[in-house]
Length: 607
Image (cartoon, rainbow, N blue to C red):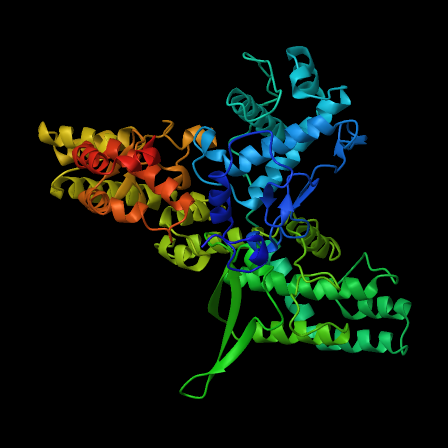
């Protein structure tokens, strides 16, 4: 059932179903002022909030699109779009956002509705671009010419990566204009923008750092000291609240009895000590579990608990919320080391001393029922190391990568263990984590042997299959039929750096290194990306169970499309998938054509 404005705060709210429902109602601009752009909010408003339940923890502090927020137009100067001076420009910006929310499938290689967090991040960049247009005196996109475009993109104060993203957004806007989805828009059929792209050091690590052994030892050792001292810290905080000790004396006591070396202030000592304990708890929890930051931020003061088993022994558990791959987060319970019960006791002691509720989120600000933003948590974690005399390039994801690196170096075949511990859907994602850190270099030789074994298993499966689907699968099938032996095919694949990467049930990406597949159109690089893998890609290989699955679907297609309990968005996705599988399995074309001839009213789903 499609969620309505009356239940949009419900945790079961399905944002993508909402988008699918809105998509079928949209014709194009001008939009009615009462068009519901987000649940409970209308097009005429200049602030569009999203349901909090549709965003992951750490990204829910300000889940809205604010069309009047000041944006940078130079390194030091900001400008806000004015509802009076820039009324039409704001209308055009709203039309762009509506198209990117509800009609994203019209953009190249973007068949899925974007999640609210993606919309918010894209909006921040696009809004910055519109504001820089306004700074040049523009009141409508129709006034933008090549000279002004060159000037704005040369001066706009953003990073190189954001500049590249803005070029992509502008290209999308030109396409939307050509489809009449932006009122009175560009007259730039052959616009060009100069990239700021600079040479990239491909050897350097990217993303969150994997910590060195001495760094993680430093962090964990000091974190444990705070957990061990939490009851004493809570006593001192209560003494301060009762007037038995001054803030200045508490600072002095902290320097004498805790590992902190610098940065304490008498005006904020309670806040600082509280966050030293919270940061310690986060460090120990995430290093133990390898959880994502959004999962760690979902920790409440009731998340860690113990149960007694049949033998009378107590076992420790922690329950966190998993946001990836879910509509509004799903709980996951882990059995953990009993030491985390001490972490729980430490957090409860500090909560009692500072007058906080026992069921509040741990990583939140006083008086707020939302988690702190991920950036704020990163600041606290870096501040933790700085206050103890070390400058460590640390983020909320570092310990997740570090745990993966330790497992990769300690276990003979680490990837299944990583897949389970880190909650990955496919082992390929776990391999990427395992190779991210220093131990990755040590396991690469083992990885080469594993690749060779994987190719052999894949070729054996091809030889035993009654039919092979996919464009690349047809090529492999032909090679085997003309007496190319298995060993020869294996040598060809090894020589071209081609490894069969499983992307689904009986579906493989068989792409050589440096080749660009369907996923490259989205990512812009030549790295395999499972999320954007499509059945019609020239590197796709499938086995007969996939053909049988779609044959069965075609047989029951009339019932599927007549089922009103299935959302419009889901039917759009399924239709797109079916068309792509007709490329992978040409033998499906005949039953598909028969299905359409018997159900002509369903042709609109495939046009």
